Length: 459
Ligand SMILES: Cc1cc2nc3c(=O)[nH]c(=O)nc-3n(C[C@H](O)[C@H](O)[C@H](O)COP(=O)(O)OP(=O)(O)OC[C@H]3O[C@@H](n4cnc5c(N)ncnc54)[C@H](O)[C@@H]3O)c2cc1C
Image 1 (cartoon, rainbow, N blue to C red):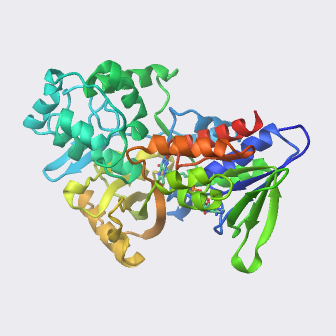
Image 2 (image 1 turned 180 degrees about the vertical axis):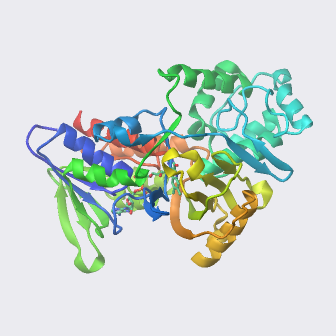
């Protein structure tokens, strides 16, 4: 891009879109930046409510610090003093036959050896894991489902009792459908050389430990006023024009750049742009890119989403022995898929109330969400009171936040779909895509993808 002032239009005011606006501003102080947002507020999946007198996240509540882009962004915004590390990260998994601390040293639940698995797996399940050494070396051939590979190599128990709860937490997805290459890229990369799942898990765990320059650095962080405080900070620093209730419908090329048809049906208008970064979720991006990058449409349409609801609850203060929380896989038949004990996990949330959040809804199990807020809250409170064995189970406050299309599903072949989208978009100078649909659903990964998009357009 040449040096004269330009207009960047960003589609979507989630963390990816707002990071793109901020990063562009850092590099091009004089450009005009417009962020189009279909909804009525900034932040996308980042949101917070006031619960028990504190800011409480109802979207993401923890950021992986090992992917450094989120902490770096917080520092660039002058908010490093707001970073909080967890007081405890010890979580347990709830299974039909009991509750077990999550074993240390796994890669998203995939063990590096049979050690430390007693209890969470049956003796036969542990023996099955140990027996991988006697299987023929693994010769990976293309992408596979996490579940298919692990069931064959380590047995069903590892999948149903360890991996499923963790993948369910991160993706709201199912091990038998999620892509190994996309959800566990390090492990997948180590498979050919290691020749076994246990060896690849050990190698990727050790590589992760080596890449952490500070061994005392926390694995996760949050922000004192909630991760939901980031969007406003980004908007202020980006000096961008934010246009709420302004969906982008159609993107076309002109001789010198782009034209976007935007706004509600009654008041459509046309906006011109020199560069466009699309951060809307995959189905919306597919519709928008149909004219300029038709090759991106089919792969984008191949990325489905899971819907979920988060119920935030404040109970009277009481002792609970659940560490930072519980993972609750489908084998339990429970409604909730996890419980985060926020007032134990995060020191700034400790106080007179027990603050807890719980999520409901998995890919292909959205029927659970077909009840009104009061019913859903009552059912979740009952489940949580039972799981945490609450002595005072009457909440003083509850909030229900629904996330329709909350998390993209990285199904088998996802990386191929992303490569096809990127290739189609790369043919259009001045156009980029970024966000959770592509190379990581976590907030740090979305930030990295947005920074990459800006770098690509400005280099
Ligand atoms: C309940 C829940 C809990 C999570 N927990 C964590 C966690 O603890 N840690 C973590 O790292 N990650 C977590 N995630 C994942 C993470 O929050 C998201 O993946 C990430 O915030 C997505 O950001 P994004 O900018 O890519 O997309 P979005 O936040 O979806 O933003 C896209 C924006 O585009 C707008 N839009 C759509 N179509 C158009 C259009 N045509 N024109 C204009 N605007 C449009 C949308 O309204 C939206 O605001 C969680 C997600 C959910 C749902």
